[in-house]
Image 1: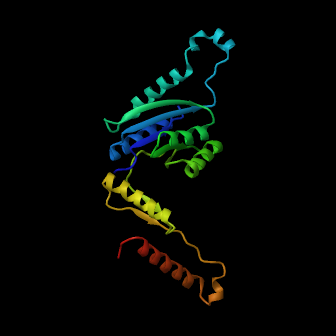
Image 2: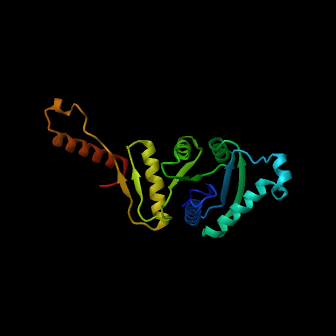
Image 3: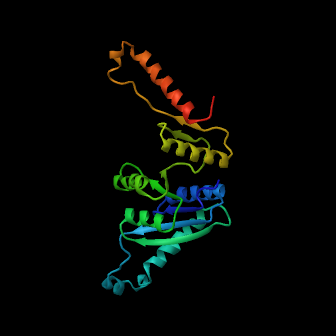
Length: 222
């Protein structure tokens, strides 16, 4: 798989990092990635001077402490392409802005981020905004998800973007040794279908045939 030579992983320094790192390992093997960029973003790494005087043991640069912690977590959970270079970057500032800027600055191909439970609405909103604004593909890993690729589902709306999604899904399937991918299109019967004189079921069949026709036009299949 020629894609994803530079993969970026946004760590949270929590138990969800394990799955993010495992997915990074899987993809680095599939793509024979050149670089893995592990990043952690904090609003600030500053420690007030009065706190340093009370706790001199934390006077060392916080960035260095965070980087060491990142390395420990990655070493514990990473099992990927052995020739991939690992880069560790503690970042300071707004999470969304830092991640987007990093993807552009380092020409990242894929950003892997976590998606937590509904209690962490702000964190999940960040993931959704990244999917729209990042300068690369974004992989969002739900908390509790298993790090494996066995079945791939591609949602399509028959647009050019859908064709790109199918291209990526096919590449994933080929690299993972999968024989099939699943293609999903959602359609609905228009509310004024009755004006055509057709029943709901009849018009649903018409919509289905139309979707199949568009899919045949999108793909070289019989």
